[in-house]
Image (cartoon, rainbow, N blue to C red; front, side):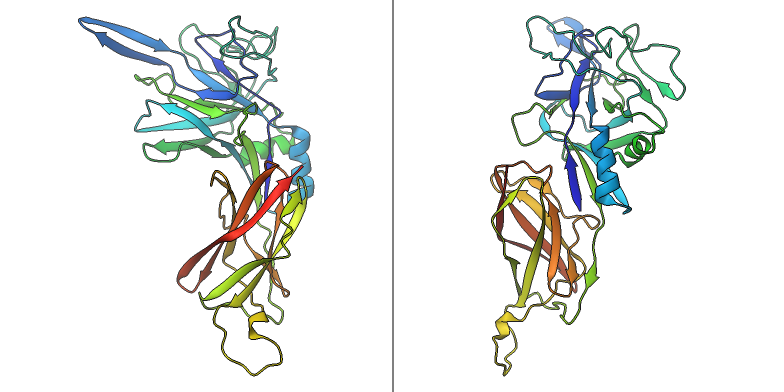
Length: 366
């Protein structure tokens, strides 16, 4: 099963503008420092660009509640997801690192484009309005990194790091497995001050590249998310048989079409043979229900954008059965309301992988 949690605050900090607060920006940035040489005619000059890092925090109470009341003892994973808004000068390969922040910070109300810089929140130099990020004598188990005399840029715990590597052709959305970090917050061994994300080689590159992601203040359907996933399949066949042919028809039983945001819905799947064998019965053979095999999964798409909101996953989107029908439970919390969605069903029968995209449509409403 999946559960999505949205941030309580986020911001980008910039080494080139060390006092700037960007807490209300619609964009989060990740870029390395550059000393690229620009040649114009006979003149060669360096172009210096800022290092930018992203801070993002999710509410501790919600994390505790999800682990205590939702996953309830199951084996779970947590993933930090950010959606790409724009990228420029993409290198052949690079990596992003994510650490737990070691000090509290204020989001602030600034924007990068403000004519007068706002300084009421986190920046490269300051974690709060009046408190500087440490540049030496770090607390045990924590560190920072910066180039030259431009100290600041946050501090973080070194014991846990999540990283994601990219090559030139890979999708550039961020999906980091941050289970170990979230577990430390839950256990209380580390205080939840959020994540800090940075380029892995931000002071070693000789070319400028920039990645922009949607922030929690975006006016799109792509805010950052902390996604919990856990395995919840049960498989009871009862008197029903499991479909063994790819010639089957799938329908969602009693699909109401509209579901309240924050509710948990059980979707049942009717499975019947497309060409049932002729039998002499008093009822129609087309009413005989079967089950999908245990290796069956669901996925969720946004109907308008065709964006995969929840992808097929062998751990968290498995389809169960209870002897009455195949089914799966779906939590609408964290799904953008007032939008139309559709389910896709994937099943493996024998050596064949089948995907059914037959307009299993519904809407999440407020």
